[in-house]
Amino acid sequence: MRFKDLPAIIKIGKYLFRSQMPYFPVVASFDVTNRCTLRCKHCYWWFQEHPTELHEDIFYDKVREIKTIHPTLVAAIWMGGEPLLRKDLVGKCKSLFSFNEVITNGTLPLPFWKDVRFACSVDGTKEYHEIQRGKDTYERIKKNINRSDLKVHIICVLTRLNQVCLEDFVEEWRQTHIKNIGFGFYTPIEGKEDNDQIWLNFQERDRVIDRILKLKKKYPHFINSSPTALAIFKSDKCQQATERCRRDYATFNSICFDSMMRRKFPCVIGKEAICEKCGCGGAVLGEAIKRSDRSFIFEHINTQIYLLKERFSS
Image 1: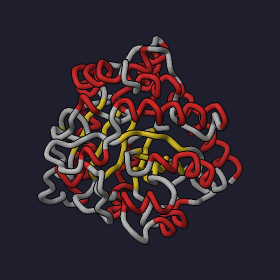
Image 2: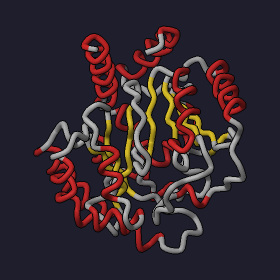
Image 3: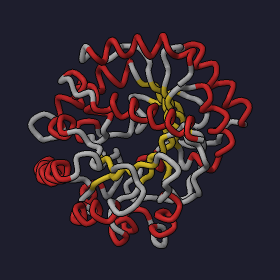
Image 4: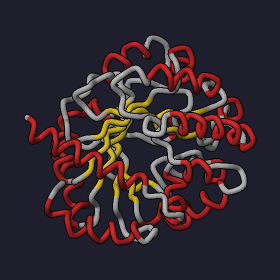
């Protein structure tokens, strides 16, 4: 944690422990690069414009400028494309924030960054993951991310293509060094021809959520998705939550930038997202906090305890 961020962290904490979302920027996501090592079937990123990417020095200066303008920005999410294609740039920029998450597809080796939470995209067991993300990727990813010396998590996007393997997927990865698994759902994209083949409709999603909740009871620490957030994803609540996300939360507490450091609206998925069918965890975060779900806060606290233990034991 950066001591310069302490006043902002205290300010944010007061909101969160009152079950309120801060109406000022807290987290920023940055598309570090306009390149990727995969072309996944369900990825929104290929439906956005990526003309070029800024030189590393210019990008760093822009990030520092944004941090100066918004001193309450204490967290950064480093994305792409594949952010580890510009590993040195991420390594330089992450020093500006107290909390850092790198969202990676795992095809490149993970750098030895103990102050970073790695969120690696794995979309099921080998057969189903490779249907969504490409052949001959699974074993390489598993080798890269199965690390006991780093804080590595899995994020899994559930679709019609891969939901069948949910339980087997969890059982397989429980035998590894992965800290936990969090689940989201595919968000349809305007103009994408295979939306209906990929998107779980609301009734299908309800049934999948029930299966995740059963796994959560069985493995409460390994399944990172909170019961409150999953309940909000259900068909009787999700559209109200995504409407509030678009109107309120995404507008105020998170800001997103592409590889040219241009703002993306309303969120990281961009204007092409069909918001009323959104499956992104961020869409229900505000509602979960309003319902006093603070599990993600304790996740960050646990991260800091972990880092302190590592620091004093080294």
